[in-house]
Length: 134
Image (tube, rainbow, N blue to C red; front, top):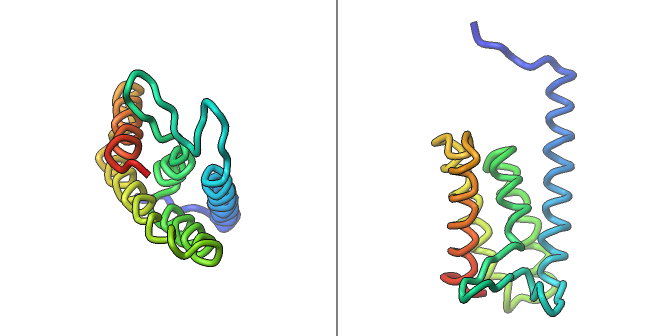
């Protein structure tokens, strides 16, 4: 027999997803604007490898809540960047790639072990840091 959520639990899940979307959107927009000496625009360089840490909230949101909240976050960030600077709005494509990759990895149960989670996170940050290069 399949278990279903009660109405109260559905509302709680909805508000948790909404809070996750808002927090992820704020963190993503803020990380695009922040710049310091060690942490430059969301990138951390260690020994020639560049780790992109600014995508971490989006990875967590997609891994925990699924692809729909992740895509809503990407849409909000895209609209925000579209109104502020149309020249860099197309760069939000990598956000969508991250959402789809994280959702497909969670569908294959890649996050059930700590080792696989760390390996996936490391490979995704290197991919978005060194290979994407934005």
